[in-house]
Length: 303
Image 1 (cartoon, one colour):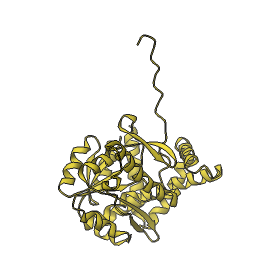
Image 2 (cartoon, one colour):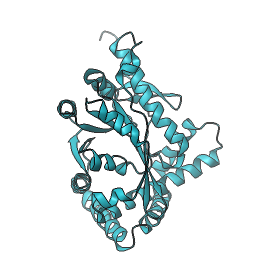
Image 3 (cartoon, rainbow, N blue to C red):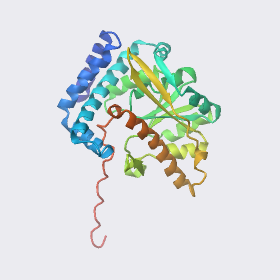
């Protein structure tokens, strides 16, 4: 029943986002984000807590302001993504201004396939779409959403935009197959993962549970990792930003594979952190990134 309620809300937002000219979708979405911030106290508190961790030098009032802006940004980004389905991929990419496209060319020239590294920052659903148009399909690793109705919609949206979705469960084998063909794999690593699947690396100066899978696969295949981001510009337009590709050979001083994996993963997060610091309201602060795992139960005597 709750899934149907959520889906009905999505259909309302989709209809409203497409009813008006595309540039208006962001304003509509930002209004919805303000409402969500007011109603969703739990995630608002998570956002404020995370901002206090990331920016301890800022006053609490600024943490609250940035949390509100993050809700507003997220609402605007969601409605913009829905509204943009009125465009085909060619028309959408005509709306981009490009920075660092030479880094895409460098990743392509390596000839080993490559990873497209994104994060929940800016307009992340758009960040790899120009690569999908100009260079070929992006095979995006994604966990299915809990709501099957919304998951069907999101998958359709992504597949119509130059992505092919790889389910997160058992994704490693599929990713290896794509890379062997010289393909492109899109992956986000800025969210917390389960302790059994994670390594701890610094993020905003604090240990953060992060997947080592990207670094392991990069080391084993030689495929570079290309960080990309997308941001909104006026008039319903966008800005694409690519950073220099990170090659696994850059950690030749590492004493073991585990050390190399840790160093590479830390570099991926450092690149993401730098971008977040430049656009602090545009990251998904509502995600409980630094949540500690539950304490282990002490063994009883004789166990």
